[in-house]
Length: 314
Image (cartoon, rainbow, N blue to C red; front, side):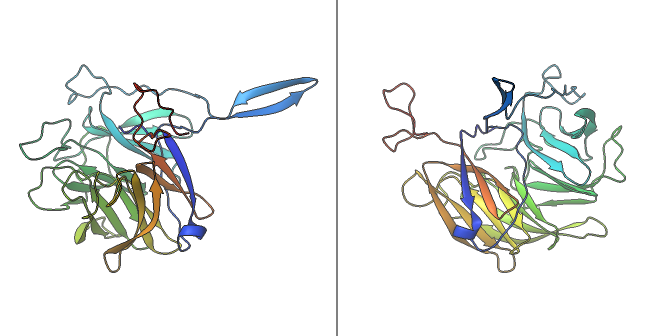
């Protein structure tokens, strides 16, 4: 899991054409306090606080005593108020009722997800599942081996492995994982990112909205990427995808958000972001991008070294 240390708030109306997107974070990083008067006393309460923990049981496929030791992206389906977590340790997707925080079950598939595995020589990230996006009745999940599956939530029985209604790879014979992904329902198109390849690339995958079948489309390479590619999001307001790029050509401290046209499979830099390492990305209700930073920099403009007498840049 990436530790996102800082949040950058970018107004799309300033830097982009009008847009929109959706995303979810599994760890809330914005912490503040609210205050109210109670007679003559001022009481304070954290704006972000722990409500409930949800124990995740181990599966028979778990090889480390049932512990949740390796997981990746989570996503909440607003329509069904259901939370999904890509759980590599249990070789499944965990399902939680987001309204009540009650554990529902775990989705496994046949053929199974990769789980936590060691890559063959020359490859670096082969485990899975990794990314997850829900758009009822579909649940899209990425996996090792550059695999992408679509699960029909109406017919999937949590007591046994489900057979995906769609099952493709972003590229042939690539053990590296397909990682984060975004879905544009108005286009019925997925953008799936292979972040561990050199250079990283994205793949457009068409979704048959009747059957759920997946068809691999165009591939889009990111040759200027220095540190992979991270979270994409779809924007129904302009029919574009946006993608966090931790570092692009130029100073390593310069990251970017790409704007991607799925019709032409081309991209442009929509905004550059210094001293951040853009990773997480989500869209607010008023055409605003919220960008999670993965790297802390010092006031000297270099990556912060906590062992040195350098102040971190807030």
